Image (cartoon, rainbow, N blue to C red; front, top):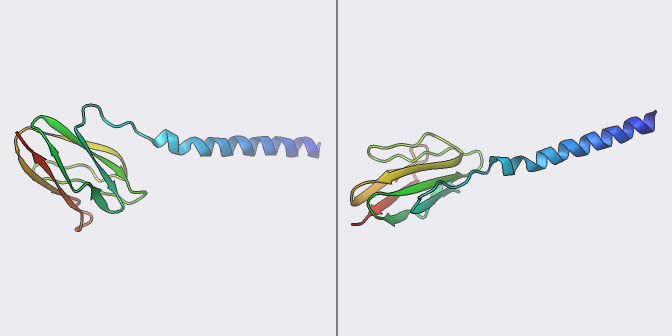
Length: 115
């Protein structure tokens, strides 16, 4: 009886371990469609710091800094604070749009929209 119980426990533990191993893949989110540029938010930095697009195009920020929350804040637009996933913003008019993370004062970047 004890050998049968031990075998069951080994199988049950192996099944639980397999479920845990697939967990990170389940969190992976596909990048948004129709994005002209992607900015990685990682290592408490925006990379690249500056991107160039054309009017009507969209920039995506990919949050991937572990448990460290960030946001993206421009003059009249703002992402929620987050630790993973994407935030997108579409820029309609030419200009230079500065943005920053209000949680980390050393994090800033810009989107240059050229005609």
